[in-house]
Image (tube, rainbow over all chains, first blue to last red; front, side, top):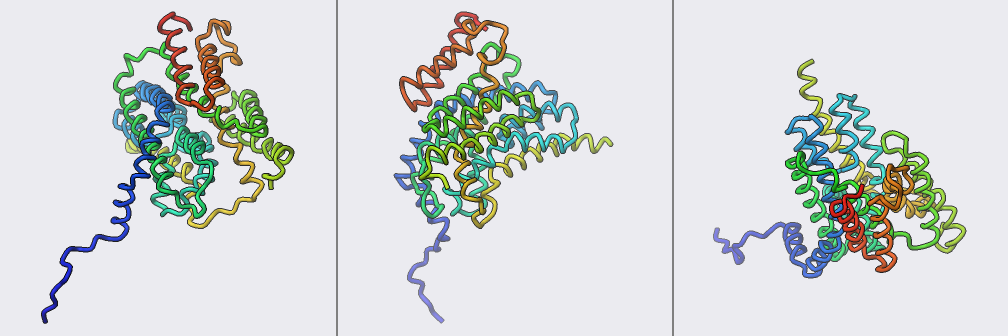
Length: 261
Length: 114
């Protein structure tokens, strides 16, 4: 039988079509450019830390393959710095994993907030976006978009902004880590690279101190961190977060009763 | 024994990657909304800045008993410059970082401070 096909072109799969159109959205692209601009300063901290971690990895005595794999895939500066000496010394794997978990615990808390923006997307997308969301990405995004979209599906503007922040930050990390590995012997300690990373974190924290309750909880966090700084495995950060949440709940009840539940 | 020793670093790297992925996407893994009590959800708004400051505080030189007195410590002045910039140009994160980093570089590389 003869069935002339009025439309002989193959029909593209609907989701691929949507994604391609989404990436052409001018709102998304403008937001992407804004994200790239907004991450530029904090990226200086990322670059500094990337160099520090690269140098540390190159000087750790581990094989080049391990170093490169770590550099490309782990993407967690505090874990890498703390765990590489453990691996180089042959520490038990459970200690390496536990140390990394504790040091990354703050990201577990961040993921509660990310849920409001990305919860509506598929799981692989959610995991990939979260993987890319380091400290400066979280801080910048939270400041620019404090209100979550109603259905857990980020708006094109939020998507573009997030990608601008995250992809730029990731690229900065990769380049600087590799540079650190390659230039390990020639980077002078006098540059104080690690402290530049500290300055970046401080700069990211300051705008978050918007109200009295947060300032109080933040002071408590700093005090607890200093008091517990000698604890191993970055536990002082966990202690500080716990203290801040406790103080914050009290302070919110007292000073922002309309907001507190 | 030799095979185990060869595998050890590779397995460690795999574990580290899994930890990064798992911790960053922890509450994003379930398809259904995780049920956190309201008071905790509210309280968690204090967590991010607490985490950042907890990483910063132990590294600040004024509180740390450093070798050089505070006025001669480039890091101390770098933090001062950063805070001053922030106080002047509120919410300019990039400028704050540059002010602090610039001060640090000038004092360390230009003047040879510690």
